[in-house]
Length: 102
Image (cartoon, rainbow, N blue to C red):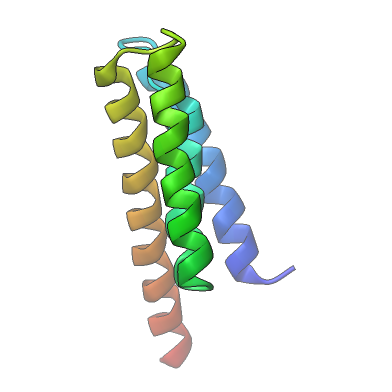
């Protein structure tokens, strides 16, 4: 397996750990955080599919609200966690590419 896949799995695990720790204070939406994370992960590979997954994450957030499983604050918290983890993943990926050129 390539290093890229290992880093993706590591950040997915970190996403779950961060969500677990945040849940001690607020019940964040794990469904939304995971789909936001996946959407931004897919976008560099295939922009159209990434946008579709991002739209589905909006639908998932709406469904969590409609079913009264989460409040708006909890859905937003999940979205922020997913976006932040992917943003950090991209930074680490670019840094590891930089190290590979040295």
